[in-house]
Every structure is written in C-alpha cells, then in structure tokens.
Amino acid sequence: MHPEPAHVGLIPDGLRRWAKANDATLQDAYVRGAEKVTEILLALQRNGVQTVSVYNLSRANLARPDAQLDAVFAASILFFTTLIPDHFDRATCSVRLHGDRHALPHKYLAAAQDLEESMRGNDFRINILAAYDAYDELRTAAARAQREECDISAALDIGNVDLVIRTTPETLLSGFLPLQSQYAELVFLPTPLNDLDVQDIDDLIAAHRDFPQLRGR
Image (cartoon, rainbow, N blue to C red; front, side, top):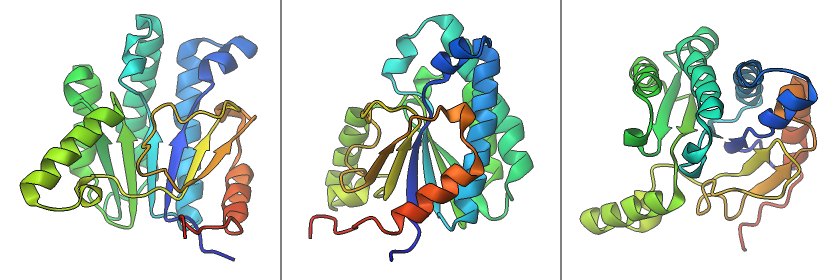
C-alpha cells in the first residue's frame, strides 16, 4: 500500500450542465461549485495531501460569453474573499495564483492577491490556475532554466502531480499541467462537482493508495 498522494490536481467541471439539469442559474451553480471545491480541499487536507492545484480557468476559457465568465469570476471572488479565509488557517496554509494575471479582471486579481499576501503557510498549499496556458508555463520555465542554469523541471513553479481528479466523464486534461501530470493517476468522475460528497474524496484517496506508482520505472 502506498501513502496518500502528496499533490492532487482538481479540474472542477460540468457546472453549466449541472445548472441546466437542475434548473439553476449559472450564478447559483458556480457559487455551489466554489463551496464544493472548498469542501473537497478540506477533505484532501484531512487525508494528508500537501498540495492541491485547482484548474479555475484556462486561457482558452476566457473566450467564453461574458455571462458565463461573470458567473465564474463572481464565484471565484467569493472563494478568495470568504470561503478560503473562513475554512483554512492562514498560519499553516498558502494560496498562489498561476497564469496570465494581465488577462484577469481587476476585482478577481485583487481578491486573489490579497489572499496570497494573507496566507503564507507551508503545511497545505493551494495553487489556483487562472488564465493558465501550458505553453506560457513552458516558455517561462525555459527562460528561467537558461537564466539560472538549471534543469527545466526545477524551473517550473508547480511540482509533479500524483493524482488528477476531473468531475466529468470526458477523458481530457484540457491543458492541465501536462508536464507535471505525466505520471499521475487520472480519474474522471461521472458524478458532477456539485453532487460530490466528502466520502467520494475519501474513497478516491483510499483507492489511490493501491495505484501502481512506478513513474516509468
């Protein structure tokens, strides 16, 4: 049996479909989604996970209609300003935003940066990927590796992922940390994000302990 995954990737997906299936507004669906992500983070922390990288928005997602983006941004700001501060210890947890900050709305960016400044612990780390593009990440890491004369893997801001959870059955990573996820266990759930419960997360972590973690060896 293996230990708990040190680093979990979370791709919260299916919220528009959940809204349609449940006769809910996009705003309500995304707020519930933000609350559910918070519950999942708490469950992962309780299970001994050290780092979670949450895929909030890819750069490609920014081309979606304004009504959809407004719902995402509003729920994300609630997540930054209320949900995370209310549920996680600032002294032991940290939050960091990854992606093109220039492409994000001012209110979203300000809320994320305030959270980064106030939460700088080392015991539980939360990475938020927003306006994220893997090619951008690779170019930045390559430039840093050349500048600092180090291997490109050491120049990446985010380390290797052990387990990726996506809350839709489509078997796609959609550009989520492709280098760091090359040896991760990939789990695609038929259960929508907003219908997950804590036991689902406990079961996934328990199952991962039996997953062969050879990393090419």
